[in-house]
Image 1 (cartoon, rainbow, N blue to C red):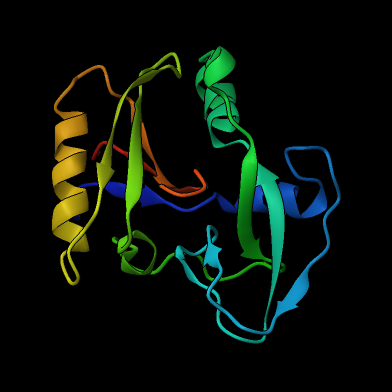
Image 2 (cartoon, rainbow, N blue to C red):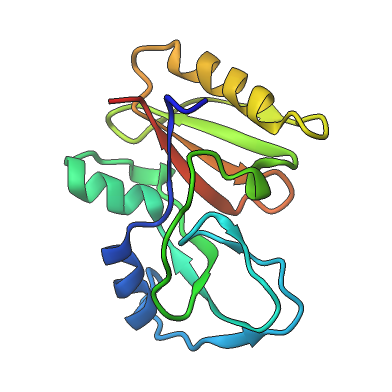
Length: 165
């Protein structure tokens, strides 16, 4: 599994989202009293008492801007949780905390168009194996440029995965 790169939201993007999100709104942070929010800045769940924000994020739009792709109607904007202030970022290669539940993997080509998808329902303690097998299947297609991992129930973006290298 370590040959895949699970990418948190980049720090420069986080700074932009904290000022004005991808829906054009200035959001404010709040103290998460309960904890458990899936943070996209560091790929872990929030802890009680941390200051977090819920912002609108368009991951495919930002990738397309950097690569010259045109995802057209495949572009999505959705809510993501981030720390209200800069954090240390992701630690480790595999975000077990976020990927240990049912997930949808969506494969995109270099244009930003969806090529396919799969649903992963890892058995307890086997998230890395289940997600790894689904990523292997997606990246077996040479046309796949990246994969987005999302929540099954709400479609929320969790992380972007790219080929090794």
